[in-house]
Length: 90
Image (tube, rainbow, N blue to C red; front, side):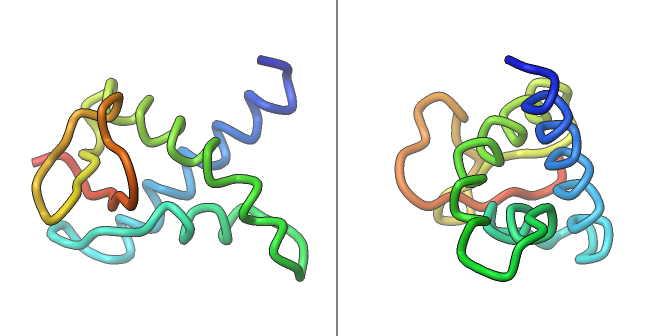
């Protein structure tokens, strides 16, 4: 992973945590919320950040900061397929 990728990853991690802080303890965010918060353009380029957001969320799961959920239930990050949500770890 190059330096710019690491910096983007750190920015995405911060965005996830800041968005969750603003939403409240029991709320979730969509990964696209973090991608849009970090993306600096006016077009749909934020979509290119969707996989990096998922990777950032996985790192935060490992750190015990967040959970990845599907249908309101925590799932293992490595096995999650399809749409996910992110919430503070309980």
